[in-house]
Amino acid sequence: MANIQVVKDHTIIRNEAFIAKAEQLKPELICTEVHPVHLIDVVSDDSAVHGWRANVLEPADALADKSFGKGDSFILDFGTHLVGYLDHIHIKPVGSPPDAPLHLKITFGEMPIEMAEPFSSYEGWISSSWLQEEVFHIDVLPGVLSLPRRYSFRYVKFEVLAASQKYSVSFDEIVCRTVTSADVSKVTPLEHTDELINKIDEVSIKTLQDCMQLVFEDGPKRDRRLWLGDLRLQALANYETFKNYDLVKRNLYLFAGVPNDKGQITANVFTFADLIADDTYLLDYSIFFVTTLYDYYLESQDLDTLTELWPLALKQIEIALEHLDERHLIRDSNSWYSFIDWNQDLNKQAPTQGVLIYAIRRAIHIAEIVSCDSLGMLKHQLDLTVEAAKEHLWDEVASFFVSGADRQVSWASQIWMVHAEVWDHRKNKELLNRLLEVKPVVGVTTPYLYHHLVEALIVVGETSQAIAQMKAYWGEMIKDGADTFWELYDPSNKSFSPYGNPMINSYCHAWSCTPTYLIRKYNL
Image (cartoon, rainbow, N blue to C red; front, side, top):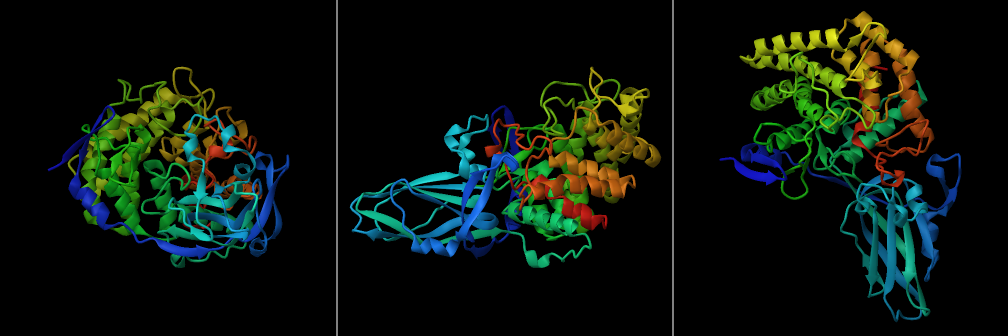
């Protein structure tokens, strides 16, 4: 019997059978011991992203010969992005026996800015508790400090806030135990003739690896949650690399385990303790349950899962259809009803219409496979929503799809209408070429939407354009120091953050991992 929970204004109907299936698919984490590589300092550099650059001082082995007193600090560079635990920090006193506790601050950072600027300066709207720092009083020395919390970092800064005048301390061993559910031995080496393509593929895989934990996390630093939009893209990259089908299946059942009383699937779930559905509902993310399930079936041929989860997937289409007006268009709204991209100026009517059409096409394929009675209804709704887009959202003079009462022209609208195949292949190709030529003001702000742009170019046959766009975006990120790809990146405004400060941005983020999928799936 289903359990009922209330989360804010939403009543959640728990499907314990689905949740139990997800629990049975929980992966074993792979642990690796990693040691720091260098001692560094962080210097001001206007040419570096965020204005800070890591400067190598000496090998990390030199740390054992140094001692630190009150006011002293040092920064370690582990050489690459890590997700894991600092569970072996060996500290010993130097000089007289310790006559007062050691007061120690440890700060973790994915980027040099987190080592350079005090977290106390942060004033963004997302909680500062995501900034990774800890303060300890250590009473007994020598000793081993083990930090129970998991961190996402490349750099670690140690600051001695206080000791006594009679002693200092040395750190002769610092070890990180990394964790992931991704088995790198399953990945076939790419060996591309283009070295930048090889590097983009490598960084993409590392990004996915660090986000693959007990679920596909959106970001191991922040938010450390399972989001449906991220899952869809992570799953695609996973199919071309780690091929962990059970982890995708587990995540599908987690979402299916906690729909609300209307049958809608939440945008994200919390999984660290009990499974909890968030109170955020995004129309495009709910719809992506359909496409993620379909993609999973194509790769795994798991008909049992497809059949069992199909009724809930179909429900997401039915809920989305309730958002159509009398013209069969998604109702225009200023509310945050759909995500699409991190752009406050973006009107989401047309791109959400595109997402719905894209999903209905895949729902029709599922209905055919499972012999569903709703097949006729889905085909009828496909005709209605496609014709509505052509009649009401296409501007013949501008030669673009428009969105909302102000008839906004955005990149997102064109990209999603191409994926929806509202026009034929030739006209879609013309549309994307016009998009790249005209460059509408309401542009692309995240790797999430940039992925859809690049894949749209591939689908219409503009492969060289797709590669150029991928290199100009993800390749530029690498030039700016990315060893995992970032949540947000604007090459023309490299300090962009929708949260008020780039310090809180996630610099290993799931929706940025897709170049490996694009490269390998389409043989770029």
